[in-house]
Length: 74
Image 1 (cartoon, rainbow, N blue to C red):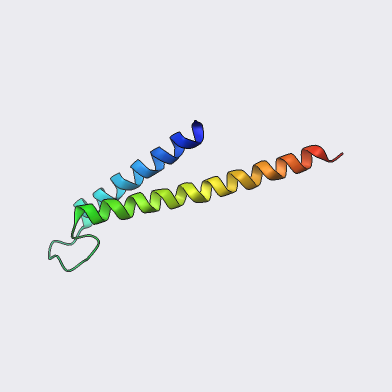
Image 2: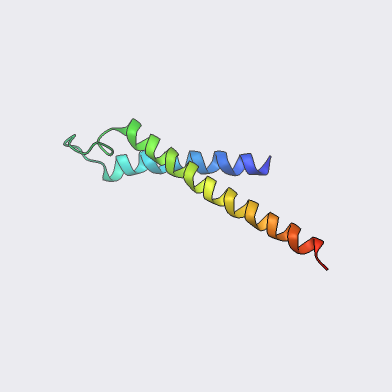
């Protein structure tokens, strides 16, 4: 449950960050493919939030495997 909560929070944070980037920094001329459209900015933010979650999960799994290996030795 905690793992899913972290994933949801990171994805939502990514979406909010993407929209914030569009709103505060975005391109008003329309020539910037990512920042000129709020939907695209939000999707990129969600994608980066998902990728950060993936990295965190990989590190958590490796740490758990290392803890299990060190606990069985000795």
